[in-house]
Amino acid sequence: MNWIALRMLVGNPGKYLSMILGVAFASLLIAQQASIFVGLMRLTASQIRDIQGANIWVMDPNVQFIDDIKPMSENDLYRVRGVPGVEWAVKLYKGLSRARLPDGRYQQTILIGLDDASLVGAPQHIFAGKLTDLRQPDAVIVDRAGAKQLWPDDPFRLGRTFEMNDRRAVVVGFCEASRTFQTFPIVYARYSQAIRFVPQERKVMSFILAQSSPGVDPEVVCQRIEKQTGLQAQRRDEFTWTTIWYYMEKTGIPINFGITVLLGFAVGTAIVGQTFYLFTVENIRQFGTLKALGVTNFTLMRMIMLQAVVVGLIGYGVGIGAASLFGYVTESAAKLAFYMPWQIPVATAVAVLLIILLTSLFSLRRVLTVDPATVFQGA
Image 1 (cartoon, rainbow, N blue to C red):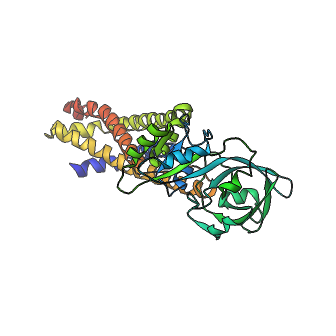
Image 2: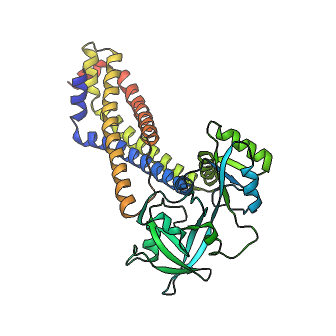
């Protein structure tokens, strides 16, 4: 019976391909839009992932996400260092600065000020220059994408200079850094140097990076810091999700992408459902013949489900493959935010399964109620 079901399925190549393309379109749209959404959300917290070496972030109690910076007093650093369970704590500056290039152009940049002594939070991969060169006067390190923005013709030449806050900055290295939601060049400097690159304020320290002592739960240390200092303390991964959830709750990004995903599901269901139903109607005499020969309703149900599963699997594979290829091409060429974790193919497979079940229900009802006498009508 399975062989007969498959022969019936491929017997009409036009409708067979139409059903596959319908499932493929739905899979492509769902996986593509979900991956772009996840990619955008990852961009919002990319700098938290890049700044490694500490498992606790300490900040002002009113900070809501990574770019919601509320400066703290230098005294807060010493208060955090005095909390039991804190192995060490260093200061971190993060803010926006405006770079003035020698040709007169201006460019907004993201300025990261690292602890002078330890350089905790420094970029992990420096492909030109050395991290220790950052200790030189006026030294900065620029990320790869930012260098291409600042100097599109010859981006990776060491020794370049530009100005920030009327102070000279000398490029001593280039590094790899994750793209940010703001897409500005990222400039790394020592903390003492970074605060000279921005207008002077009474409070300049953006965050405190802390490490819990060995054997002490970071969550417990965070609670101690909050209780003893009144500051907000979060684990690194927790702060990542805090930032992501802020953008999800305060912006229309989830709604916009959600509508597109639902549209793909609805269109895929409509195309596959209509085509599969017409395919079943056209083969109703064959199903009636099988019933006249004694084939049970359960066997007919199994045949219909087999046809639907074959269409779903092939369409799903084509759609996921096309979405992955789209992401690979656009992320490399157009720098589109695209990230497909394993959960997206699984969720897409569940959506395709629902499409198959919904479309099969219409066809099953028609097949199960067919009268074997229809075989002899018009004979």
